[in-house]
Image (cartoon, rainbow, N blue to C red; front, side, top):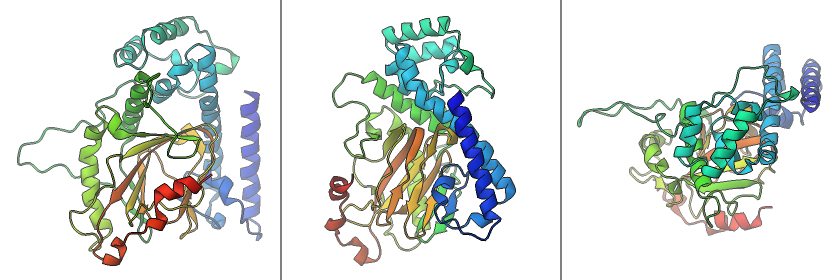
Length: 382
């Protein structure tokens, strides 16, 4: 609790300091990195601090304080669960909304039972969890000063669609695309409820595979501080998201009008889409491109709540901006755009990535570029 107070004061002093600097003529070329971790904005220009109003600064202070409190709990959650004999349950418990031990007391008997039935806890862990919930009395630091976290154990329902007749057209999805720059877009792919369901589906699957070689999260593709998982291995995930991705792919043709050969957009390989999870402090990625042998399209979707982590964002060289997504939002850009992932300072950050292959009307873009292969790039990153 003392550490939370110290972090809050540090953030408050930083924002107050930035406010003072903004009112002075001196530029702040290095302040963007710190602001990008707390500002609730889609895009934060590197040298555009003068555009921040006093209300926005106050919003940053309040939201930043909440994020610090939440991510501190998220960082401590695993060690606290391990001490309670529930460390192996960290993934599914975090996915259902647990951020501190006190949240376990808010789980209903039906939710606890559903976790056992869907395999999120084997009989031993289920009994340990029940015993802990019955005996846990909390400590002084567990006093809840904000509304309790919304806890859900459901792995279905969020993607339900109303039935339609055989010849009835499907209901179009409004992706609410916004143009960030040439060939760079931000839109809304999933709802918050859908993000939560996907996270629970992934964690329940991984928990069931604990102890099985080659099952669950791995770190063979990205940096050692990130884990990844192909959606095809999670029961029901590809089928659940297919109607949405089908509409998204059709919409992407309109984002690049007349430039992509009709009917050519497909997932780059059978490993797409895939999930990426960052636990705790995670080093950012170096500047890189997502190219395989050709110029393809990258879709990056945020699955975490804003207060689940601090830091993060995608820095794009060509526009010199860091783009931060809200829950369910997606960033779309060409694979040959140079970009980097910002450092995660705490918490758990979950994203979905889809690499889409396509054929361009401009044949020069269909020429193989083996020197920019993502496989080669992965061996040179540190």
